[in-house]
Structures are given as structure tokens and as C-alpha cells.
Amino acid sequence: MNTSKKSVKKDPDVVLIGAGIMSATLGVLLKELQPDLTIEIFERLDVVTAESSDAWNNAGTGHSAFCELNYTPEKEDGSVDISKALKIAESFEISREFWAYLVEKNIVPAPRTFINDTPHMSFVWGEDNVRYLKTRYESLTRNHLFKGMQYSEDPAQIAEWTPLIMEGRDPSEKVAATRMDIGTDVNFGELTRGLFNHLKSLPGIGLHLGHDVRDLDRDDDNRWKIEVKNRKSGKKRELRAKFVFIGAGGGSLPLLEKSDIPEGKGFGGFPVSGQWLVCTDPEIIERHQAKVYGKAAVGSPPMSVPHLDTRMIDGKKALLFGPYAGFSTKFLKNGSFLDLPKSIKLNNIGPMMAAGLRNIPLTKYLIDQVRQSPEDRLESLKDYMPEARMEDWKLEVAGQRVQVIKKDPVKGGVLEFGTEVVAAADGSIAALLGASPGASTSVSIMLDLIKRCFPEQSKGWESRMKDMIPSYGESLIENAALLEKSREWTSRVLELNYLEEVS
Image (cartoon, rainbow, N blue to C red):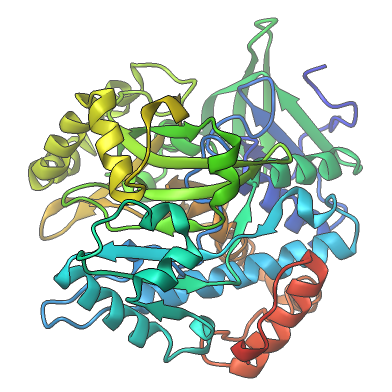
């Protein structure tokens, strides 16, 4: 059945577009804050979490900045900028707090169904990269968020941490690695399904699968008029809502354009597709237990940072390498090849052209990736697993991402590699654009959205926010004692490693 039984009979307070982790998180937060809110959710596919939140489509399964080198760029003077890493690490701790609350309240299933201990490692080779990684390690570990991180240039130690990476490697090659034992693997598909199962059980919630949002317009009374079409029956419906959230992944940009809000003018999208090599040998899978991230190729997008990645998917351990980038004009994995050309408007063609001209190396990189042969992909894998054999791996299609292009007063247009919330000045509508770090920081993103779009109500919700997220309103970056208390609690509730030396 494509429509939940508890459909809202009159126009709802809130409409959520897209049934991924962002809409699920926002929906649960709002219902916890104000239980009498009525919410309708529309998803164009016949199941929830089938696009970017699905485990096979999502490259970021626990982004906490422990191992992702693109979050700590090297400056011209050789120092490392850790500001973004600190913010992402803090945001992931906030996500953990909310998930722990959900587990304690039996809102989501047992934690092992969606989050598991998986060490996070960075691995590099070559003199310059080793120097960079050591500087990064020294910079990060000055902050308590990264206490417990280990660093080694000893091949024997690294082989103990991750044997597949060192076997068959030239012993004279200079290598280095960092390791955080409190890293995790998160299955956002399972988490999202749990959140929607909870939402469906609540009064005032309507979940509609197989429904396409066709148009968005402001009404005379400043409500949003939403036109929805049932993809199976062809039947159309029109409803009105006080607040609309567009959390449709790559499909958010076209809907933002339909809203015609001034804040959405000038935004464009650059789609990037991906593929994985998936290990088919159980013995190899069992020998690797870590998320090992390296350095991205020059000109490549952050979602293409290579990693040899232990996952828990459908209750089974998996091993993936990639992703290999590509280009498609689709904005969604299940989208249309016309998505990109249809998104080009008079107000964004300038920024898109300017961003394109400034990112020619990226275009060349994507063309090279598309032209890769199986042998080329194997050579990339061998950088991280020297004894890899093609017969132990199969190629699978990953998710589709749309990187944000936005206006810039100096450059005309810039390509952004983060996530961005675009909201109307009156807070009546908001759209989430972009990709990494995305799902891992979903709770922080939605908390910021609530403050922006529900400013008056937020003042009265603060004590309730503290119940769900104990560190709400305080800084985990600055307060070491608060971080220790938070990690001890979330580790216990989520059944995860907790390192005493972090305190």
C-alpha cells in the first residue's frame, strides 16, 4: 500500500518532500518537540531510503573527520587547517546523542542494526604525504575530540592494524597511518527505515510513497500550495502547508527552483555518479576491519576520496573500495537524463558557466574516470591492497550526488562540496542541497534548520531539545568534560567502544 493509513485528513502543518535520512530526522525531531503537529511526507519511489540514504549508495557511513583527509586541507605554509574537521567531529557527536536518545526511548531498533564499531584510519605513502599526515595528527590531537588517535610510520604496526594494505607492499616505501578505535560504521538505510516506521505509528502523520511533487506555489495567505501526483494511478492532489522541507537529495534543486523564492536564485547543480568495487571473497572480507581513507586525486570531488571500507549491510559484513567517479546528467540514481539541462535557468546559467570554467581539471578527471577499464580500476585498488585480484571483486553502481553551484560576487560562480540549507526569509520553506558530509551530520543540520525556520517556537523548545541532545546549546569543541560525559553515555547506549584515555 503506497499511502499510510494515518493520512492527515486536512491540510497539514508540515510537508516533507523525500523519504531519506534528512526528512526522517526532521520529522521525528518536530514530532518530539510538538506532538500535535501534522505532517505529510511524499516520496516519488515506492520505498523509503532508496536513493542517497541507502547503504549501497551512501559513501559517508559515519563521517566524523577522524580519517577523511579532505576535511583537513594543507595550507601554503605547510600547516593544516582543522577547523572543518572540528565542526564535523562535533556534529557527529551530536548525531550520536540523538540516536542514543532514540534507542533509550525505543523509537528505533537495537543499535547494532544501524551502528557498529569500526576503526577509522588514514593511510598515505610518499615523503610529502607522510609529512602532511604527521602534521595533521599533531594538529588534531591538540583538541580533545581527537584524543586517542594513534599515529605510526612503522610498517609492522600498520600491518597489525590493517594487514591487507601492507601485504605485498614495497618494504622501502615510506608509509604512515593514523587510527581511531572509536570510529563507527553507520547504516543510514536501516536508521532511516526505523525512523519512518516510528513516524508511521504516530497520529497526524501521512507517508505517501510513489508520489511525485509536481509544483510549489505561494498561496494568497502565504501558505505553500503543493501539487502532488500518484505515479501509479495518475491521480493528482493539491494541499497547503505552513512549512515545506525539500529533502529530496539530487531532486531538491528542481523543486527549489519551482518554489521561486529569491533565496534560491543563482543555485545550480553539478551531478557526480559513482561506482564501487565490492569484494566477493568472504575470507578477504573477514581479514579487514577498518575504514581506511587515502588522499583524493588532484581535481577530484571529495565524494571520490578512495577508501577501503568495512561495512555492515543487511546484517552481514561487507568490504567495498572506491568510489570511482563518473558523470551523468541525472540528479538521482532513479532520475532522468534531462535533470541537468532542465535545471539550467536564466538566474543560474552565469554561475554554472563560471564554475565550469574554473573547474576544468574536475571535468577532465571525470572524463578519465568514465573511460577507466577494469584493469585501471584494479590498479587503483592495488594502491591500497597490493595483492588484490580482479576475480575477488565485482563492480556495483553507487549513488548519485549533486554538488552545489552558487553565485559568487567575485568569481561569478563557485562549486561547493558541502551541504547547504537554502531557506526563505520568512522560514516557510527550506531545501537541503549538496552531499558530503550529509547524513552523518543530519541532526546538526536539522537543528539549525529548526532554529531558522521555527524561530519563535524554538525558544520554548529549548528544554525539550536538551532532553534529546544533552549538549544542545554548548560547545563540544571547547568543553572536554562535556564531551567525555557525552561519549560515555552514547557509547553505553549504542553499545560502542569507549576509550578511557579520551578523557
